[in-house]
Image (tube, rainbow, N blue to C red; front, side, top):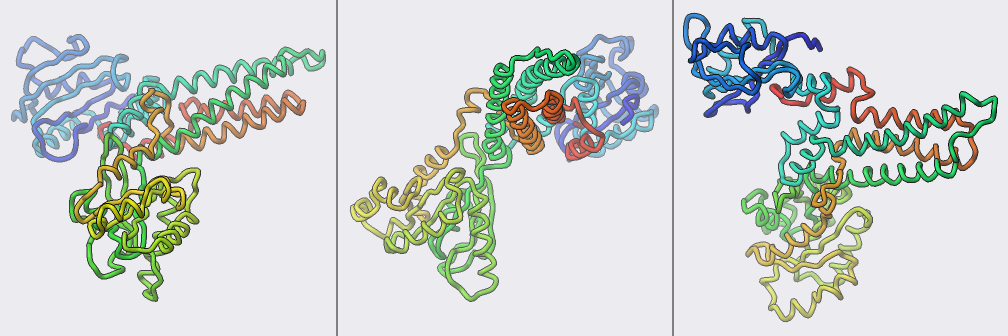
Length: 470
């Protein structure tokens, strides 16, 4: 990347709209804008105006006026990228946007690459790498929870945690390396017991950050909910009822669903990704068997499994199906909700007597038993309430740091491996140079997250997924 270039791009969403914003950033931003912008007040020149100034005027190619615009002025270093920035607000016709973009390029700017404005902000020290990645997460947020997590990271919540960890580690390694300088004199500057206490504290903080990824990843990508059960239990009907649209084909013929059908639903600021699967049954149909194999894979991948059973099934069949589904689940990380469907076909007293929730739940080992009529959308509010209870949002509600980026998660795991080796080394009396090496490795991985240690390849992989104009 050449930071001395002046770059430009359309920063608003593609397509026509009431207004579009074209961003121009770099050392020549003011001079290029002055070539094409004619202010309504002729005595006002862009380069003479103070920062955070708006000017009204016309964009012209020297012969024809293109549009009436408002120009916003941001001066280095107090701007998003740290450069001089001009933002032109024009009418949102696609033709006008392209004409103005081409005009800026003709006058010395070049087209920005995906994420190049944010990358410049990182390279100019306006934000660290984890904050830069949070910008993309904020733009892509599909729910209130995802927005809150991304905004907290963009404002530096995660970065502050890492800064604290790094400062403790630097103090630690400086004492160890100081001992190495005086190794011939057998001097011990660092109390080993205090160092072990410090390592335990850092390890606890790393574990907390690592464990938060399950919540952060689910919030960022949607909480996967697999709807499974025997053929014709009403799984597709339930999906349609939850989404309030005919998303899946519903038929009395068993085996209609042969593939996994996915759709998302936002509930109280959380995104749930519902997956309707092929019915579990014995069949000689090769295509259907492929779908059933896929069902078991989706069970393993889901955070919540909704097992759909027909109220007319006998207890033995229900318990056998529950046992089969649970055998493909991890009880430590997944929730099982058994849904008894078609309750409109039995009288309420019989239903209550047979499926007394506490007794039946204990006998099946499910987290909840919910009777519904998917066809008539009966008792779906109870199902939604139980779904929300499967997600512990206390960390978000209390503004705690939640890790949602897979790259950060992997780096934190590697950093913790180094901390564990450090603790073992201290306990076993390993030489200080080996301990110092382990600590430097931990510092390396934490530095990778914030961008204190990075490569062009890593930066390229991160920013290539940004939208152009950001």
